[in-house]
Amino acid sequence: MSTPVLPDPKPAGAALRVEGLGLQIGGAMILKDVDLEIAPGSLVGVIGPNGAGKTTLFNAISGVIRPTAGRILLDGEDITGLSVPRRARAGLGRTFQTSSLFPRLSILENVRIAVQAAQGGSYSLLRFPRRDDAATTQAISVLERVGLAGRLDTPAGDISHGDKRKLEIASLLATDSRLVLLDEPMAGVASGDVAGLVDNIRVMQREKGCTVLMVEHHIDVLMGLVDLVAVMYFGTIIALDTPQNIMENPTVQSAYLGTGTAA
Image 1 (cartoon, rainbow, N blue to C red):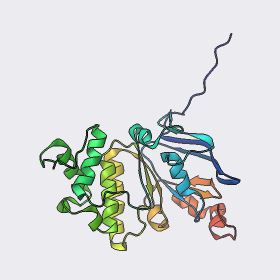
Image 2 (image 1 turned 90 degrees about the horizontal axis):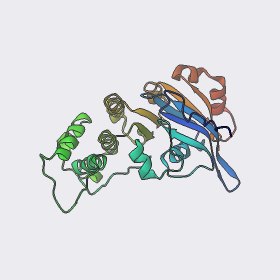
Image 3 (image 1 turned 30 degrees about the horizontal axis):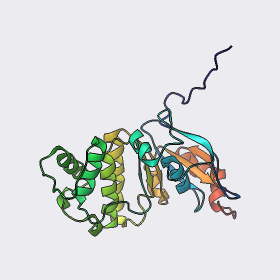
């Protein structure tokens, strides 16, 4: 009897590999044959018309929804069947279009929870943490890097939308995430806060050495930030290239300027 040869699950260098990903709900095909490969440490933007499937792709990668076809590999590990918490422990972090913070907890407490979750510790809201313990010290250090250390005791629900986005990035900095999904990080952010938020994303990528995949409708901001751009249309990726080449791609121009409606 011959020994079966198992396929190599990941080519060398792929931090994220999406293979033939599909999602069918009823008779509607939401995602279709999505293929995507991202090198470690890269920053990739995802663009496309409203309804093209961008957030649905993020939901599939992060485990919020289960695809009906294909598979997802994180650093060579097939995570297609893993739960959201298990994907987080495997090194996947994410922000959402709407804030996912604890609004009644302080800025410091929000990040301290992320630190302790990464360390595998427990957190009690009934016991006020010491300002000199290891988790609190690390949380303060992270908040200094995103410019929020001067407001440690402010409830997260009382800060501006731009600062909430910075706080979400601080929470990601406090974790062991190797792949970070940012879903419209600039949405609702005042124009004066955009540059600072862009710097925070660069700091996160540089300090963590992580791979970043982001959806963003501010095309001018995204094009100046990312290494590559993936274009989604009708639930699939129609192009993956440098920002300059994407802007000059006639297929991409047709997808944005044509009369068709994206799925």
